[in-house]
Length: 166
Image (cartoon, rainbow, N blue to C red; front, side):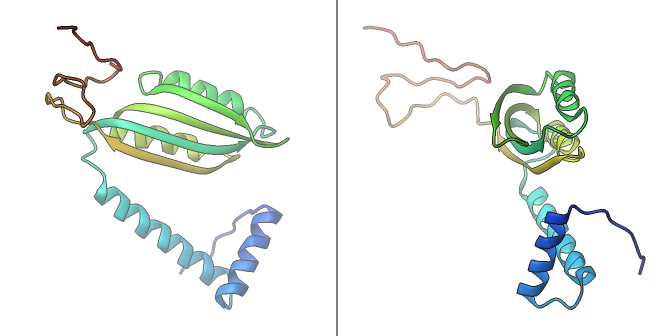
């Protein structure tokens, strides 16, 4: 077994201690090992449920960040610009004096979206990063329950239906 040193904010450490107390852990190390194992297991299960990495789709990336973290806002903006082929739109919300919430709509391959999400979530000062992936729907003509009066095909990036008056 290896011994490592980890730097943790006071608030997070208080949360870990409360977690240990609530769950009955004898040490922080044992609690952290279990949390890490659970996260790895959750990630593996999630990855198994995802479509193949080359599959295309849409994603919603949400994260909170501390805008006082040096140059973080600039790095995040640059990252979005560097991935303009993936990043369709981003909404920015001021949560409080220190924190900002961003929600980004992505479009591309599952692999590219996951790589981008990881590059954002792993930045120092970013918290609660989460990517929700939705595989692309079929391009088969179909009709909805709503009465449009005609079948139609969905194409990526096209958000309107053409109706013909008979």
